[in-house]
Length: 163
Image (cartoon, rainbow, N blue to C red; front, side):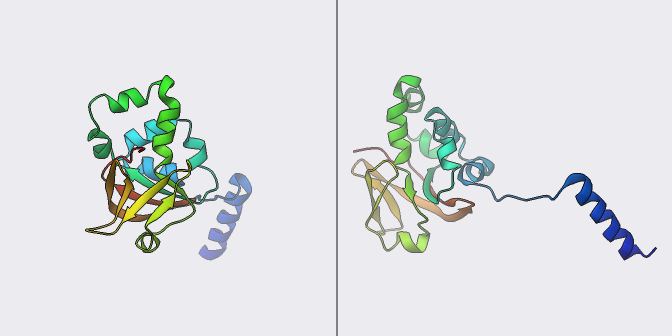
């Protein structure tokens, strides 16, 4: 038996025994967790019951604050927001970072504002780099267009807070 027939036979046997293997692209949550710099964001998404939402079909655009961005908040802020009694407040903060649809870096620079998944509007500025936020402050976009199976992530250097 030739090597190619043996290889084909082995491959066919594997498919019969194990079925087909489907590789699934990582969703927004899996991509963020896999990056290793969004541990606080992942914890907050869990506390606000938003993990399943952001693992959903989408598409979503997420302006993702890094762990360093959360560390810039006043001491005790993150701990306070993670308390069960502040779940709705936390959810409101997190939804300021999510825009329905796919908004790439090329799209962002043409916008002045965007409607968020929570119903609020965030401002977008292209003066001195791209920034997104509210009257409470703008976060600088430090990395763009991280593709996920259900949208795109843009990394930001601060947490967007409600007005």
